[in-house]
Each structure stands twice: as C-alpha cells, then as structure tokens.
Length: 288
Image (cartoon, rainbow, N blue to C red; front, side, top):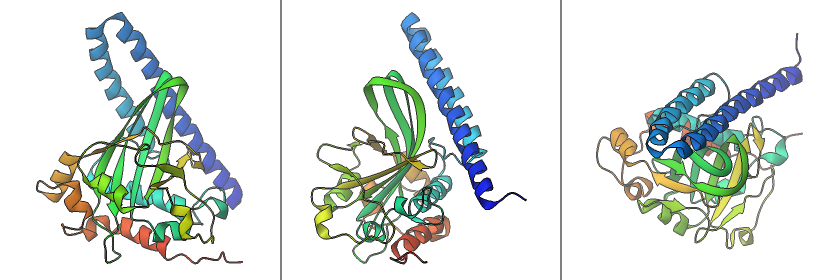
C-alpha cells in the first residue's frame, strides 16, 4: 500500500502536469493568434473567436478532471464552490501546501472588511493578458458576511512574458474604502489608489493594527497548489451584472449585494460561509 506521503506527492505531480498542459495550450493559442492577426485583421478577428472557444473548452475539460480550478466564468453555484475551495486551501492548515507557515493568519481574516476570491490565467508572448472569474463578499456591521457578488478578471501587460499559468487568488479587503470601490459598479484596477501589499502568512501568528496601515488590500496567490507571490497590480475587476441578475432574479447592484440589502441565499452559498467561519475560528496555536 502506498504511503500518505507518496499519494500526496503523486496527486501534486498530477495537478502540476495538468496545469502545465493547460497553460502550454493557452500559450500556443495566443502565439498563433498573434501570427494570424498580423496576416489580416478580419481573418485575425475570426480566428480569435475560434481560439477563444477552443481555449475555453480545453481549460474547462482539464479543470473538471483535475485539481486545477477553472478561470472561466461559470454559474453561481459553481463559482461559490470554487471560492470556498480556494479559501480553504489558503486557510486550512490541513489543506495548505507547504505546511503551517503558508496559511493566511486567523487575525487577517477576522479583521478583513471583505474578500475577493478568484482564479485567473495569465499567458503571453512578449505581451501578457490575464482573464479569470470569482466573487467578492463583504463583512457587514453585525459581523456577518454579505451575499456574494460575482466578478470577472481582466488585464493586459507588456514585457518579456513567455508561457502561461493558472493562479488562485485571495485578496483581503482591509478598509471600508476598498469595499466601497467594489460597490461602485465600475471597473476597478488593483494598485494605484487601492494599494496592494503581499499579505502576511503563518499559522498562530498575531498582528497589531500597525500592519494594516497603508495596506488597503492584502494579496495571496497560489500557482499549481504552491504559494506563488504573483503580483495583482494592474488587474481589472469587472462586476458580472448579468450573472448577478440571473441568480438574484432581479436587477441588483454590487452595492446592494455587498451592503446586505438582499437576503443571503444560505442554501446555495452555505459552503462558502462555513469556510469563512472556520478560518475565523481557528485555534491560534498549532497542536503538538
């Protein structure tokens, strides 16, 4: 019988191989797209649509059959389940890769004013693009959490980019202004007015209020299951108005959702709040 360590190593290896296959496919498609666009604008547009469809199908298929979270927009329930899985991988010492030193501290979650949780894929060849999807929730005055508002991720960069990668993110909103930015119904660019800092890590650590001074957002990222330290500056957050309308069965703004002006659909989103509660109520000392 294989040992637990051998099984864990095998699972990690399979996950990394699958992620590598997905990202290699995306990188190849983007390179092909650049070549086709240079041959003719009209043909390039049509080819772009074809490539987008192929990429979506490949990513969704491989993500479904592995531990790689899909960055593609999906239905409300799937998005909530993905967010709960991602948050758990960052906060549950039993699920976090790399041991107790690689978990988001309890104090960070307890003091959070909100959480944005998403998966993004970044790919490029001398330029880079980032797309993804997820959700945001806010802490209400009574200490409970709001209903989720679904979001899409976008962004374009330049520089010596080669290849692609799928990354899970947890962005901790530390200030009321950060929450308000997500409530405005406008595209939000992380960085700039919303300062982003790499969040502290470590199980059982306690932090003073000075840690949060000047840090509107704490960023945590994992690529292929391991902490990656990927920058989110320049990432664009886009409200999924149509998806929110479909789920809540009415026209509803992010401000209404995140300020608690709509009932929380607990039967659908319970797994997310259970994960947040567990992260808030963790023991501060590791068991011996």
